[in-house]
Amino acid sequence: MSCGLPDTPLIDSQQAFERFLDSLEGIDLLAIDVEADSLFHFRPKICLVQLATPENIALIDPLRVPDISPLKAVVEDPNILKIFHGADYDIRSLSRDFGFNVHPIFDTELASRFLGIRHTGLDAVLASRFGIEVDKRFQKKDWSKRPLSDDMIHYAAQDVRFLIPLYRVLQAELQEKGRIDWVKEECERLSDVRYKAEDESPRFLRVKGAGKLKPRSLSVLEELLKLRDREAQRLDRPPFKVFDNQTLLSIATALPQTLEELQALHALSPKQFARFGEAVVAIVREQVQKPEKELLHFPKNGSSINDPNCNVRLALLKKMRALTAEELDMDPGQLCNNALLGRIASQSSLSLQTLAQMEEMKGWQLAVLGSRILDTLSQAPGVRIER
Image 1 (cartoon, helix red, strand yellow):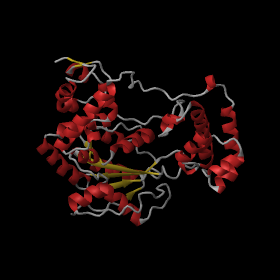
Image 2 (cartoon, one colour):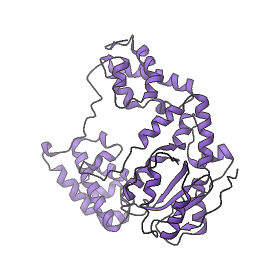
Image 3 (cartoon, one colour):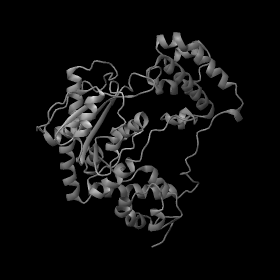
Image 4 (cartoon, one colour):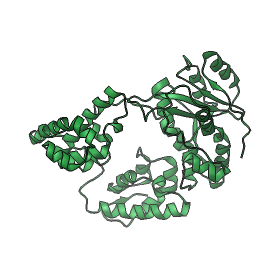
């Protein structure tokens, strides 16, 4: 498929940028993507903003254009639908770097999931829908380096070139299946996400698997994460390129208190061991010697209660979800995530009203699942169903 759009030269001057903005007057659709340098720097930044209208493509270089703030009026215009593929990261990045609050949006990746598509990466979707092969060689390039090669510019243009045609195809299929309002509601919520600077909350909350650690190991992990951040900031590198999470989890679990014990663990590379071995061992020793009352604890999420019937109810809900997802040809997790099912299962009294009052429950979920949830739990132990 060819969408007939020309490759627009890279916009790297204020004058060219403002001319392009003038060309957007009267549009109602705008495809957006961004390229950032998060794989190469401690504090990531947007290095390229790709835009496509039904007639044109523009690649805006924010490292060369002094002021792209006039774009704010466009991306926040309620009369222009902004189309993304996997919008969450892009919206957060645009909020972080430029203060843009992008709305309204349509996420073609999200829409694909609501149509039961299993492989929802842009390359897979374009190959399936249009027979287009997208060259992903430049996906992990350092977009902060200049000049950008012709191949990188072509790759960046491809990421938005087909989003508007894809939107039109997916929108029609969602309409046919009666799911367009589901996606609109999800996209409305998604448009509200914002970048949040890391606060003083424990770093371990952002590490998968930390919740399984005992308090002493959790305290070690937190200090190791602080060490990693300090070094990453000093080197201007992403933290995972200093230590990956699994390395730190292994050390926190084993609690090696000598260099010999740390080396025997084989968690660090020889270079890491030579550079950080003593600091790591010192952290472990300090936390091992701490009194119990000073150790960190993983916070409870409030979803688990001491109810022997809760697991029975949760199992029934998961079975209902699986059957409904199969009927709708959707991924069960997309239909309803485990956290929401767990909260529902923990209730001692349920009605459509109490379900609707749950913050996590979306309107389309209540319409599809509300009565099924009540029917499923009507004979379950320890819960009262109100009709």
